Length: 277
Image (cartoon, rainbow, N blue to C red; front, side, top):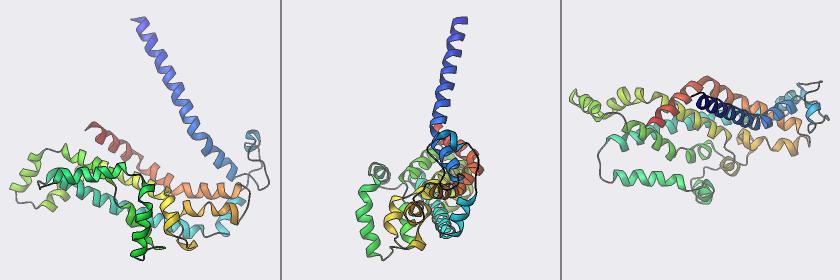
């Protein structure tokens, strides 16, 4: 019995050590970015001991805020990520509800066609998507940044799994009471799936906030840049040093970090609820 407890304790310690190294592995580039952003221009950013040594300066942030369109780029990122998140959650939720609770011919085929979208790499869709945007005359518009990201097969899959777990008797009882499909969705299924939808919304927001490839291709007007597209321009346009781009990176990370901190409880609940199914 004692040997079993010792083995269990030893295994737990190994797990903690492994988890600690994983955390440090993830934190190291973030910490380096943060410290570099406070390093005065001309300082050393590749020597670890000097990164932790004063003086520290806020001038890099001042330079970014006063010598670039970062406020405009932040507004673009926030607008695109917010609208994309709201529309994606609404559309995927309605699609998942229909595929889970409505009986119609070809329902399974439609579901598997949507899920097949998970197997197609984003890069493979870039050229046809770009041609569609040209035909619709949407390049360099918010529509080009938002519309292609609204189709999220993973969101449909997650919410359908959740709705499948809701008893059909609940829906039948509501129908007997005279409730319409829209009212059943709004008053019963929507409140029940609040945590899953919140988790999906946060993931969608962060994915949209960090998206680089498609915005890089869809817009070439500087005033329409999102932050991930705009930040690399600091390296060539403003300075060859890393302090300015790192200060811009820190500023760009703040909104996504705030969203994550405010709603992290919903992420855990949503992942736990969808993982149980």
